Amino acid sequence: MFSKIQKTNFPPAEPIFLWDGNCGFCKYWIIVWKSNTEGLTYKTFQEVGSEFPDIPIKEFKKASRLIETDGSVFSGPDSAYRTFWYFPKPQKKWHRWYQKSGFFQSISDHSYNWIAKNRPLMMRLTKAFWGKNPIRRKPYWLLWLGCILALVGIFIYIIH
Image: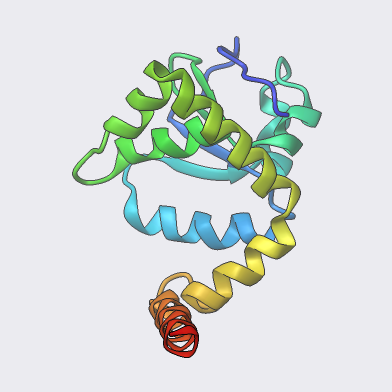
């Protein structure tokens, strides 16, 4: 499980989201987030992790981090929820829910940890559900849903 780091003594000049540049799944979704956010810089921890010497590199390898200009650090799923603050129409509810609900925080943390440990699988599912191009995502998941519903319908028809 990733560690939650509250603060860095080396705040950036502008808000920055740090992610693992060796992760194809991460890269796909960073491209999506970049196209939907404003005022947030995205860098890999390999590029700028050393600028935050009080955050161990092993922690950057475990989870993404969003670091604000006051030095506040948001980790793992909370870093993702915090990016919603940088949408043209900010959506603050996810981050606030994560901060206030122990149940939602626990589910988010464990889900994030599972996803982080299964990145190749998540990349395959991402491509299957959304396509290969993160900028021109297609709702292939609707086709999968249709197939599942059709199979359920056939199964119900057969057993009756």
